[in-house]
Length: 413
Ligand SMILES: Cc1ncc(COP(=O)(O)O)c(C=O)c1O
Image (cartoon, rainbow, N blue to C red; front, side, top):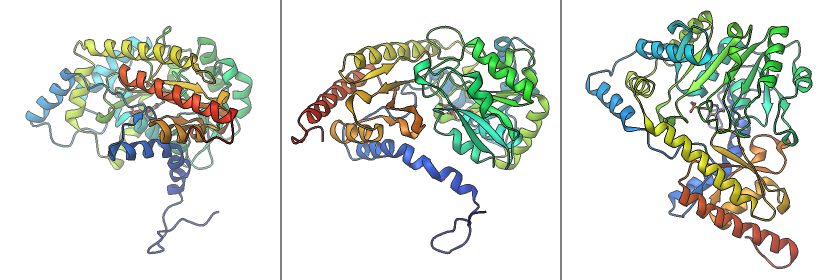
């Protein structure tokens, strides 16, 4: 076993766990944090490196939270979430999933991230393996490692449109595998798993006795076709943990409200974990979430339409820039841009684009070295800023091409 990490000042030991999330995450977000620093220093930086909705939370939701505070909902609440919210979610999920879900099969968590963490803590431990698909959402390796288990990646191939390959998936499942962590609609590729792909995952879970954690945070942001949850497939309800969130669909990332739909016994264990880790969420944010799921909120459809239009604009505009190519996402709030035609590694591309033109994107290496020449571009900026970003990206691409054509003349910064 490796040496325990220590406090540099006192020499006192930390747990080995701290290394699980320290590794990689700083590097993954280096360009993003640099962009924020520049912005704070007054530079006109366009931040396209994070998926944080730029829209305000619809006012009906904010008003409900404020009313709850004014009504004195300021005390401890139940670990699994306030009862009316669990009941309302159960109603919605019953309709969406097509089978009856009770309030006891819902646990309200502090966002999808916390829901995934809680699920893994209750399902796996040191020595276990969890299969994830690569390129993964940047936090997946760390959150799996935080449970003590080891992530095993199944590569998704850009050439196939990031489709799940059953043979590759089967090869990644070992004696130690306890769960598959699936994210469809997928961040960063925007791919939505087809019924056949879902069935392949489900079949493996049934055959090998595995849990499926199904991260569905982008389920309400599908632009080309419907979303289906793998929990609906035969024999899957009892082995699937569905993870959902209001962060993206309702512009509520800072509220930290998400939930799981899972078998009752697992939910009971998770509530126990929440009591020990958090004691419980905040009642007023959950009142806001209840309003989000009860009141008619036209902004939700309007935001989805805006993301769709931004996607269409960005992809078409990038396609017109020599050396760049955009992979049009079926869902979500990101586009992957292939920068291979410019001959720069993605990290260098992202660093130089930020320094020269003040546009931040996330380099593909942050997700997966195997992703190739891709950078992730967020759609969470208003259209005029996206238009300005495209102008800057175009200017940068021309400078890089000119530099490549005349290597002794400095260009592109
Ligand atoms: C795939 C995926 N899962 C989970 C999360 C976390 O969402 P939340 O804000 O609900 O914790 C994100 C956020 O970007 C995400 O992209």
